[in-house]
Each structure stands twice: as C-alpha cells, then as structure tokens.
Image (cartoon, rainbow, N blue to C red; front, side):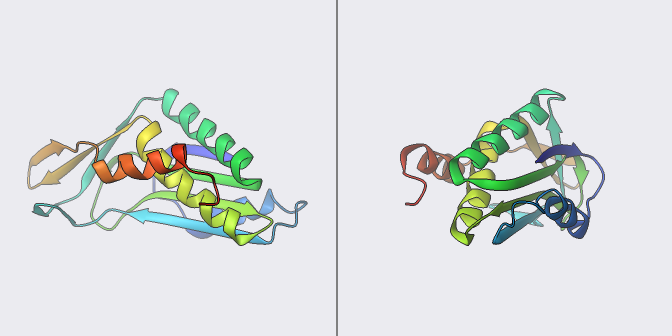
Length: 157
C-alpha cells in the first residue's frame, strides 16, 4: 500500500506497475485505477489552472488512513493513492487511485470510496486561477453528498 503527496507529475504506468508488484502473492482478480485531471472550466466558465495547498505530514497521514479504511471495508489486497499539490495547468494529472481485490465489484467500489472520501477527509485546499486572479474553491454539496453515502449505506449498496 502507498499514499503520497507529490509536486511532480506521475506516470500512470509506473504507479500501476508498483501496485501490481506489491500484489503478486495475493493473486487479485481485479485492478481498478482512476486518474483525475484539471478541467479547463468551472461552473462560471473557463479557468487557467488550479493551485493545491496541503498540510505536510497531516495530509499524508490522512491519505494513509483512508487507504487503510478502504482495504478493510472492501477486502482489498493492495491500494495506492498519489495526490499532487502546487500550481497545475489545465489538463494536468491531479490524482491517481489504484485498488486490487479478489473481485471487480470490491475494486470498483473501493476506488469510488477513496475518491469520494478524499475530497471530504484529506486536508487539501484548491484555488482556481483566471488570468492573474486566484479564488479559493468552497466545498461542493455534491461532494458532501457523495461522502455521506459511504457513511450511511452498506458497502454493497
């Protein structure tokens, strides 16, 4: 298992290979990965990138705790997450999540769980840039709803 914060870009293939290399003995039947990228727009129109800030030490710990919860809840054989910080241009990679499980449903659910809960439980803050102006982004109600679903429903719902 791994959980990292990075300023530099990542290779999806290298992360997939790392996830699989650590999972050789389990013979997992399913591997699911997700990569999030910077959109070039928000609800108000075009943007010119984002900037992500984090709390060193605390953010990595929160990511690791989230991975541990997913492993237990979905019987994962391995999982990994990498989240970038700093100034990111439109279309750059922001986040990568990988899950390994005996069955595909657990791998898919765990990847969704990690992304939904990450937005609510990991101390990372986002600014959106339009020209030379930056504005902090408030939490979205839809993100709150997605996280609450995991807190109130059975894992297979």
